[in-house]
Image 1 (cartoon, rainbow, N blue to C red):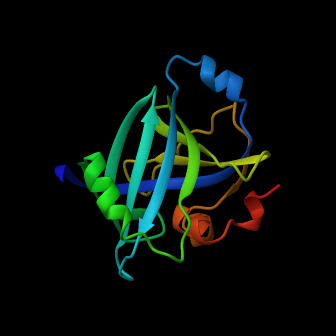
Image 2 (cartoon, rainbow, N blue to C red):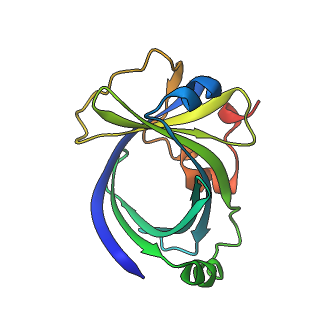
Length: 172
């Protein structure tokens, strides 16, 4: 494994109405990624996962560990890994969890980074995550997105929970 980084991840999370995909694709500052996220057998205090991301036919692999500090903040350790390391780590996949597949649109807005996750099981709703510099930050709400509910800190809407069971609030 290489390119190790440790940082704090601070974010707010919302359920949003399914976004206008055509509009997102037209934005020059919006980037699309296809993601498969697989959770590995983990301890109670640290969640481990591997992620395969495809952007414009380029594939990357990431190993990630998250340690929760609060509902909004986690210590996040990430490493870029090789395809071979990715496949080796997949052998440690948690058998109780399914891989999470999603399409992610990332774009800047109002000085923040917004990530819109589209899941194949929902045609009417998506999840919006906004990366923050600190817990007191209040990011602006983009006028082109309809926020239905804030779910920051609600473990039922974590990707880990989605890997075990899709929350009813996201299903059609």
